[in-house]
Image (cartoon, rainbow, N blue to C red; front, side, top):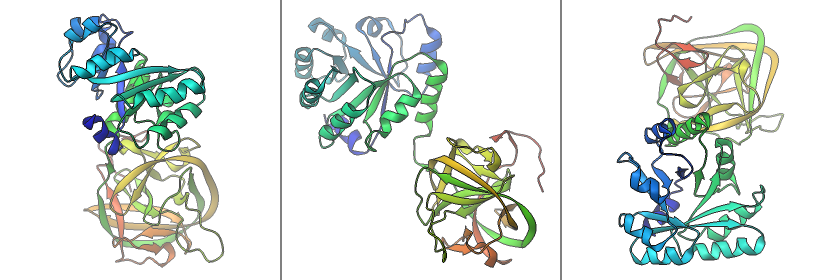
Length: 375
């Protein structure tokens, strides 16, 4: 169980695909899975013997009889709800995954105790509540057994990974909806540590440009003092606008908020996409970035638009001219290139700020290769 335990210790999220109900004739589904980042696939014995899988695939084979073990390669993983079969599999050197359908509290308590004997526990529940999953997560948190929950949609997967804040160690995704599989693929492709490259920007101009609508982006999370969002007027990059985590003399801090800028502005989002601040709404996803360029994805809870005096900040970063338009007020903070926040109304030409630079050209926020000039 060392391999499973190692992955659990590193907070690795396992995503398995349940292929047992997918006919080998469904080349549309199998083609999508075989060319996706999904590596672990659950199959039955017949699929194991007759299917053709790419080298990257790690098969987890469901067994129903002791003879089934003869068809499996040593060191592979076997799945069963028959614990006596799994004990035999362990003796032959296979990794083991026990499936338990939990119905009631007594079965829930027994499930985690039985699971301690195996590498993986795959659970499903008779009711849609997440309470039994919370309890099993708590019981297994100090064990080496990797806990997986069956799910049938990407949304359910996200919920399972958030249960009790810690979430399960993995999921078995059972479904053939192309859109749902693509969402899972996107998750797997982007779950590596998010990071963007930040550059120093030398301020060339700063001036009040009159009244206009500015947007505060309120998220469902709390940001730290070295975090904020990338906001800009052009598609070739933006400037680091700080979270509202810095001293305010007359009001409480709002660590969930970035007073981001004028409503026409882009704000950077996952997968190097951008969205107009005016188009954000509850449920949108935005990037929260720290001074080292490490990013995380936050969910928008509210966008607040109000008329305020506006301040234009222009500068050059990595040879490109960028600008951001923010509320003209001392309490708005823009991150300096030294990692220290600067009061927007005190910024002067020659000051250095933090910025993100990319190739210009976007259509509905998605990067495209086109000739474009933005001023």
